[in-house]
Image (cartoon, rainbow, N blue to C red; front, side, top):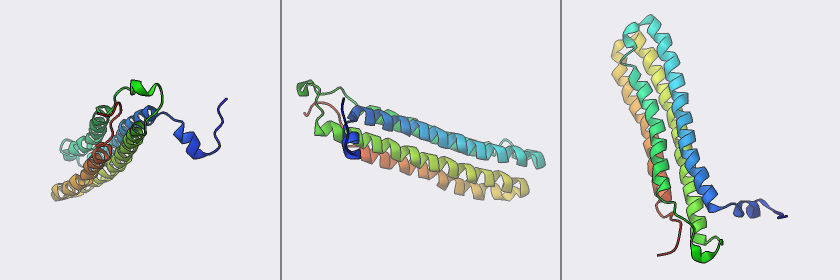
Length: 177
């Protein structure tokens, strides 16, 4: 029976491949959660505001599309992270190299960064989309002005993707070349 005497020892005992797969899963999972949350916020306001002004139904669907893009950002990051995975080095005979630990941690933090960044982005886009629908129901001239703010909110997800790619750039499993 293996005993762990501290958090560092416990976390060090987890396979780097497990860290990489958890990070990849977090990139998709948190991004989809952010998209769903944003669609919920935008959609409920859109349905409510469309009762007063039915003309806003179709053009305010762009806010829902912006929210859905956040989920696609997570899928893109997960695909990029999967390209860094490779089998373990057979020369090490089950031992874990420092290169593999670095790759596992880098992919984990890359996925976590993309996931939480896209979660925040989805909520931000949802709140902006909600405001856009409500403002458009009151005054049709406000739609384009608030849509520009929504585009800036959507840029948060792109920033998260860029940071995740930068973090994972040097992460490579497998034998040294």
